[in-house]
Length: 93
Image 1: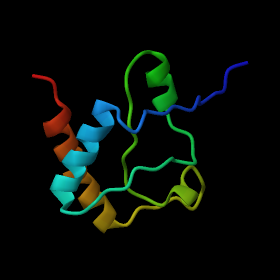
Image 2: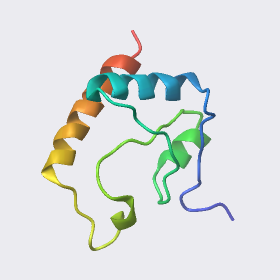
Image 3: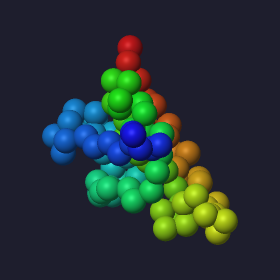
Image 4: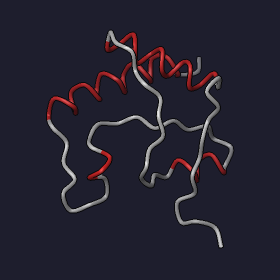
């Protein structure tokens, strides 16, 4: 039986990952680490459908999907900038 939320991964040299990392680093003016998320997302379903997916977002992953989940306003503000940078860089013409 398949997992309810299948895992997914992009190679370190995947062009989408490289472009997204570059867009975020340019927007934030600092290095952005690439790492594995330890919680469920719908990204695996997208990848299974042939749609490349990256994860980006604010918050503490140890609190994700719990009754203690919360996100500081400063992280929401920064995430909005990141989403705009990703949309501008990754949008297809």
